Length: 289
Ligand SMILES: NC(=O)c1ccc[n+]([C@@H]2O[C@H](COP(=O)([O-])OP(=O)(O)OC[C@H]3O[C@@H](n4cnc5c(N)ncnc54)[C@H](OP(=O)(O)O)[C@@H]3O)[C@@H](O)[C@H]2O)c1
Image (cartoon, rainbow, N blue to C red; front, side, top):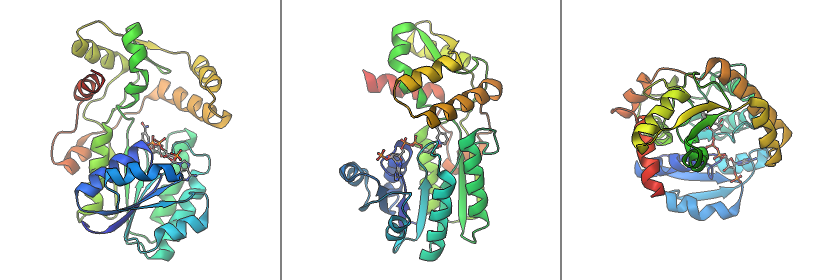
């Protein structure tokens, strides 16, 4: 509820930082859990009242961070190889600390045969069986991935990711997800729920390229990057082997199935239409001009 003391994990990350902003706007008393002291100033600026420094892999850090906490928003570092261990430890520490509401930032289709989805599925199971009051949020692929390829797209005229140009995705705006997280934590009626948080349209890379072409007023075409080549580039850029391999398996899955869901629940939680991909492209263009 508004005024509750909420612990947000991995708080210097992009999903958590935006969630802290939206929670603070709604009057939540946010304690941000970060790994590096240098992250403190940005979180205070985002509206956190307290920042605790610790490591999600250290049980003593978890118990310390949970003292006096009413609710938890657990956002795990992406593709973390010990995500299920972190979840187990944080859930037991939350039970011991008397947490009243535990919100887990999971993923759309946790059953998918992708290692980090399956670790989230296990973590969901542990949470459901824990006896804690919970809400599970299952976000789709963020629209914000476009930002990572934007400068190359502008240079080459190509919208390129390592999966089929016809694979379907319910791309979702990160700020809508953060707003939904703040809603379930500050308003009553969301305990025991599992919410699929997908964007308003199902889009392929080809659809995205067409929308970007309209917004930019120039032709952009979609292209599938070879998955092995993409993995080699990621390794050359210094990504650890486990992460390269997880990304490769994820891209193979996306290549065949995409990641599409249904956007109704998100719109209901927001009480307004969720942001479209065209809205996001316009925001990105405005932010870069
Ligand atoms: N991207 C998508 O499309 C998508 C879709 C659905 C779900 N998700 C899920 O969203 C979640 C958040 O992703 P994100 O992209 O927002 O994350 P992110 O920006 O990469 O941030 C991850 C954060 O985790 C922190 N961290 C790493 N190891 C830690 C540790 N041992 N102890 C404490 N903190 C640690 C990092 O801290 P430092 O600043 O110190 O490095 C960083 O701030 C992930 O679980 C991901 O699977 C993502």
